[in-house]
Image (cartoon, rainbow, N blue to C red; front, side, top):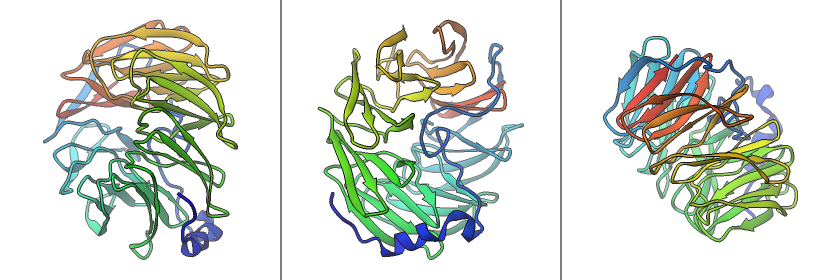
Length: 361
């Protein structure tokens, strides 16, 4: 990855989000840094089922909650919008390919990709399609949207840039291998990862690669960013903390299994789960183990943090709520299948398990 055409992109950056009069984007995993920390009241007491919404396909999508609606996708190729309070369906759209991720919301528009390579702009209130474009390769995770430009990755070894006002592809950046990540961002630097184990830091101001780091095996998600460091997990069974300015490895921590998601980070602690449900809390500055909890079964699940509680899903079909300082279990909830990617909002927890989305209160 070297340089890319960027004249139109930089026109958007120079304009600024406020100048366009558009609302800031609502992004999954706590925002553009993907920390997995939610600024909301946690669900402290034992979680009870408020509602369960049955879907056509399995739900591994991290739910995205905004303005009384929860948005998510399923592996049979449907996008859903469901009422937070009641669990009633507001709308669904057949995407044409598996929808592994949630949308990114910008104003009243939901921007969404699917594994058929379609990138959609949908009316967030009605689900009505505004436009779509098609790119090479599957799109697994939502775009980063800023200054009228959507940035998203695909299995085709490219990150794409789309002008969302003109519904037109601007350009693409080649990478060494396919990608299954949503770009994370701090300042004027974007971060993406590929299946060759590369982490790319891209300087948009100069249209150059700032640095590149390579792990020994694939990395599925872009880094989570906090305190000047980029945190990633790899299928080489190692978690890495990289200096965001240089890509230098600050620390590495060896686990007993592959890591398929990026860590969640808050207040000096990084939390990560292996593919086989071993959950770790690490000192974010040193990489030293603070505590760990071992569960059973295979799972793809990033933890979610709210105040003093961390929630994570196990391959043993349970959602766990732990005291994030000590690892002490506060409560657990039995689901129908492995528990994927919880989201916290206003004393509620949302997660997918099998062919359903659960809401606990």
